[in-house]
Image (cartoon, rainbow, N blue to C red):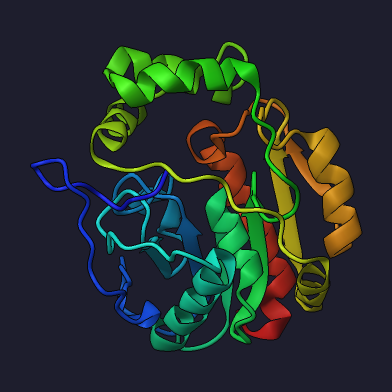
Length: 270
């Protein structure tokens, strides 16, 4: 989903693009110690699945991604989206983090994490991440997307989201309500294409942890595993009880992955 939100009369707002570095949301003021930086696709601030309770163990900054639904800028880049977002993250890190940081991204946020070449990144965690392979578009999702976009209601939204969770899983009520609001107020955008192989090869210089859900309909393990090994030289972590919505379905497992990555990157001053 992209956030170029419409005005109350239904017209899209067109404004000059402000500098990438000017669009930033922080949950804590900078201070010394380990950092966990989370550029993820958001529905509130703090971002999806990254509640203060889950971030309490480390100083944490959470981004509202520009051009995506939330409280950040409603302008998105018209071209060169991956490079633009990567540079935005690089500039944001320079402004906010006093030292090295572990950077966490989900879905589009994962592609942003991979696109940034910031020297402040001590480690990356990418969750059900775009940027490595093209997303699948299963018919079960596509057939439910049209009613959600054309006549959004909370029940239609929950039905659209249901294939994105693991079998037997429940779509959180607050997520259905938020995504219904997204369909009413925002224009949607396509998922970004895979990043260039040469760029991904450069990301091997710092540890990168890649995870996806066992039942992810967009980025299943059979596609993500070979891509993670080929491009990043790392094995895939599969979360067995999850689909695509990892931050809602497996928050405790995500915290455990962050702990593991912080321990691995501690030698770099994260």
